[in-house]
Amino acid sequence: MLTFFGSVLLFVGSLIVLQRTNDAADRRTAEDRQNERQRDYRLFQRDTLLRIGDEVVEAAIETWDQFVTIRNSPAPLRDEPFKEIAVWGRKIAGNVVRLSLIGAHETSQRCIELRDAVNNPELQQTILDLDVVERTTIGAQLHGKEAERLARQQELRSKFEELMEGLNDARKAFSDSVERELARTNQPPR
Image 1 (tube, rainbow, N blue to C red):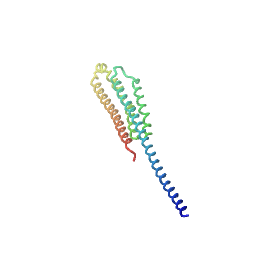
Image 2: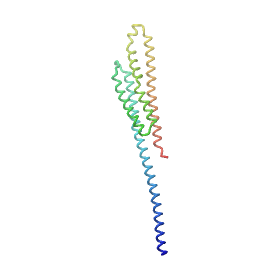
Image 3: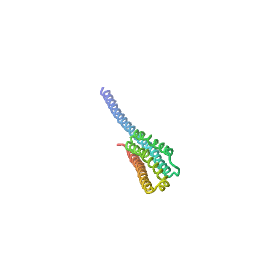
Image 4: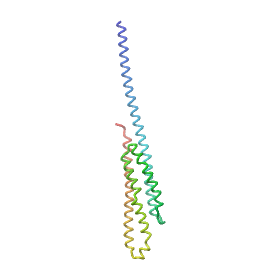
């Protein structure tokens, strides 16, 4: 009988040890799975952030170039050249929500600021006004208003440069924010 109870006790003890071993293995597996999910999510965030950041910066650079092209155009300006800028502005705006969805809230805010700088109606109006002022040289000379025209031209050029600087600053702030978000996504989970 003692042998029987000894065998039963040994069997129960081995079941308890087996259960504890399985529980510990399950916990380790669950932790590993959770760490893998977090790593995969961070990789997804990083890859998505890189793709969106590249797209937005490209749109900002194209917008800058388009503003400069419009500004230097020898032909009288109309609203048509600004349509391409509106397309780039919509491309930037489309990424605002995507950035929020991946948890890049600061970068999303910088993207909003960049979109606002691109779609700034004051910048477009300044370019149009400057074009008109620069094309009225002969009329101003004939009417003795050349000094007024030159003063207005200088004022508008300064305003144009200031607004373009604002666009460049918004692009830089967005790029810096993307870099900070990338650094955050590259950190191991806590």
